[in-house]
Amino acid sequence: MPLLKNQDYTIEDIYALPEGERAELIDGQIYYMAPPKFRHQKILGELYARIHNYIKSRNGLCEVIPAPFAVFLNEDNRNYVEPDISVVCDKNKLDDQGCHGAPDWIIEIVSPGSRQMDYFTKLFKYRTAHVREYWIVDPVKNRVTVYNFEVGDTSDYTFSDSVKVGIYKDFWIDFSEIPLDI
Picture (cartoon, rainbow, N blue to C red):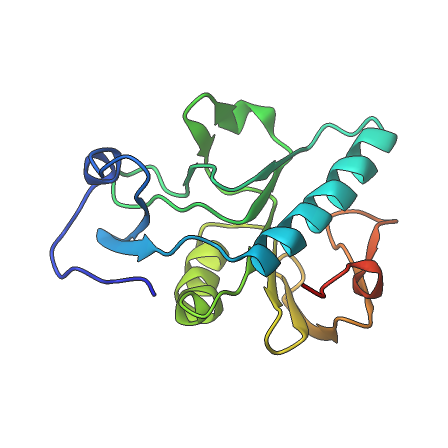
């Protein structure tokens, strides 16, 4: 479960964390992250592979990057997140440090300790940072919630559905093909 400390922190505090300790920084507050479980990583790997293969098969210009990967949403030192999957189509936003500005598409896979962050805190943060599309993949609820911020649309799907990727015209991810048994 993310633990909130009640003082103002900066990206320098994130970089000063002990080796192996992961946290995100949202509006100057540190949220510690528990290590992901196997099911979480299995879903992440399956989604990453499908997105990567789609982009590669079309000689696409976007990059798909799995966590851990630094995303600096704002031009300040008070915000740093590590989305489970980031798709960045403007390569000028990318350098060795991470992504500077909003990715085009972000996927978060809900863990027991990240529910509040994924459904509320990050939803607000990603929308105001101008992420084009945000997916919340919730294995416990068997649900995928898609926020297409460009058109102001929200849709809910189950893990039996094919989900249309809004930033592409011809890309669907069939969740029924993703092995979820562990």
